[in-house]
Image (cartoon, rainbow, N blue to C red; front, side):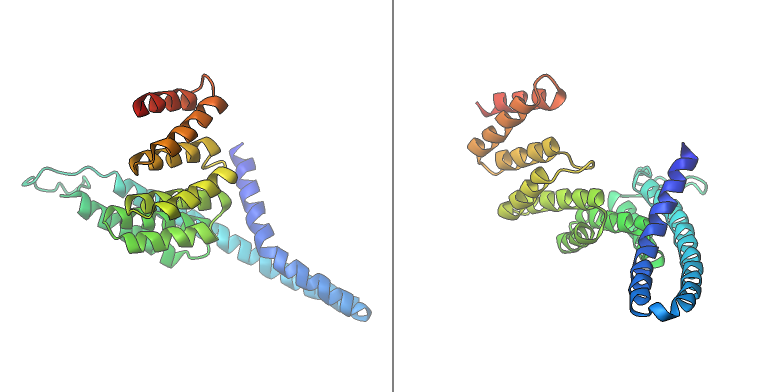
Length: 241
C-alpha cells in the first residue's frame, strides 16, 4: 500500500509538470503537420526534460517533508522552568514565544528553499499559525490568504478556516461569517460542512448573536441525530436557553 501511494503521488506530480508541455506539443503538431517527424523528436526531448523535472520535484518534496517534520516537532518541544539550565542533548525553550519564533524560522526556511513543493504550501500555512501565536495578525492574515488562494483544495480550506477564526478574534465578524458560509457550501475532506457550521455557530454565540447561533445548532442537531456533532449541538442549545 505504501508503494502504491508513493507511486500515485509521483504520478500526480508528473501530470502537473507535463500537462503544459503536452498542450503546447499538441498545438504545434496541428499547425505543422508536414513536419510531424521533427515533432516526434521534440516530444522525446520535452519528455526527457519533464522526467528530470519530475524527479527533481519529487526529491525536493521529500527533503522538504523531513524539514517540515522537524519544524512541527519544534512547536511541541518542552519548555524548561525558569532558572533551569539547558541540557545539551535535550532540546528545550525558556518560553512559548522563543519556541514559536524558532519554529517560524524553520517554516520560513522551507518556503525559501523548496518554493515549488506541496510541503512548502503546508509550511506557508504554519507561518500563518506561528504569526498568529505571536500576535502578528497582519502577517497571519497574509500567509493564510496566500495558502487559501494557491494551495490544494484541502489545504486551502484549512487556511480559510484559520483565517475565519482570526477574523472572529479581531472583531471582523462579517468577513469571518462569509468564509464560514463558503466552507459550508463547499465542504472538503479537511473541513467538513458540520465542522464549518459549528465554528460559525460558535462565532455567533461569542459575538452576542444567540438567535443566529441557535439556528445553526438546530440545523446541526437535525442533520446529525445521535452522533457526536448532534450531541454537541444539543449541549450548546441548552447553554443558550
